[in-house]
Image (cartoon, rainbow, N blue to C red; front, side, top):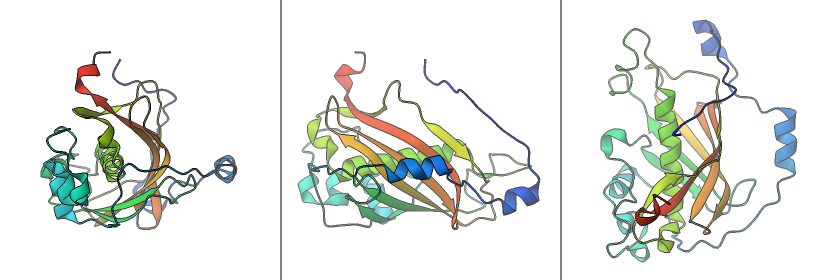
Length: 236
């Protein structure tokens, strides 16, 4: 089993409804659950005073230069060569505008990133020629990249030697979409709120990600999780 979807629900909407929708609105139950969260503290293996990162920094991560992005104390000395962001064409965030490793409702971190959009970029013309929108799978990819960024930022890679980013088995995600992103839009904001992070049995992190178009949340990913798994253990 690679992927399983349950409880899917979809609808048809007019262009006007899509353009003027309110986006995702949290329910009373969700607000109540957030009020009962007890903040935690995580002692990050590595820290950096930097709290914002440009496109060149992200490109350094795409070639595995973690120290070039975060600072010399992040030097890997040849370890973890596969821990990197995707190459330029698949890099779905352009800059990280803020990082607070102790922020958010859970006290474990908040990261905000932005993606510039252009009608000429490859992802609009291919999806689809007669009704172009940014694919939800690419927004999901950006959410994963932002979580990978956070995991490197706090130094989870110090507990591995030759690991990959891997999804965590049997951990479901809830995804909601309440708006579309078209070639007329110019920028998306991704806001990751970390809900859990730890080192055992493998270094891992979970978070919720809001995808904002202006001030409207158009997509929400809950319980997104990744861990760092040594390649020698992948078949276990």
